[in-house]
Image 1 (cartoon, one colour):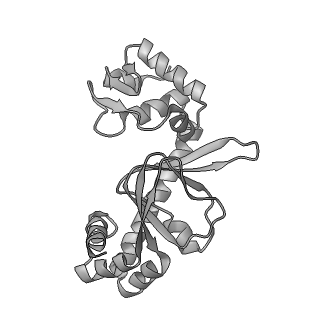
Image 2 (spheres, rainbow, N blue to C red; image 1 turned 90 degrees about the vertical axis):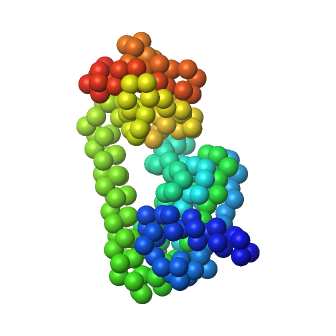
Length: 226
């Protein structure tokens, strides 16, 4: 048990939310943190389940999504290593409004609400960092709404491809999840997403080989809108 606890503390200390905490404060957080091993395809929680803390991803990926009354799935977010989810609902004391499913074998840390609230009462700096994290998440969601409303499907796909260090000539992106999941995340149908990739490849802006996409002309790609 001691080894597991040390691992938890080390990981928590690397998160932006907790990287300024003293060892004693990390001890306190670790005491209220549980490790969850979730196999690919397994559900972490369902919409309507009570939220009694928040999760961070150590390795793997988690899909947050909801299903319409017609049975269509909308992917809200894909959470990767070093990122967290569930903080806002924890503070609101509301049940989950989305479902969470592992897209790969995943290790999660679940930090209990009681432990977080206890830390908030003792440390105003920690409270400010929590607010900053929630603000970043809200800003990201607003940017998503703007993208869905004002940007074309092609622009959304290009933005996705150019995100991060791979967005230069010769840069490579490996699609770590299915095209169906990515399409839903970008508010597109899988068929529309595939057509856009085919179009960009036909214009020699990208190269597509299975799950690997290579940026061939980043400058023209940024300016392209089909």
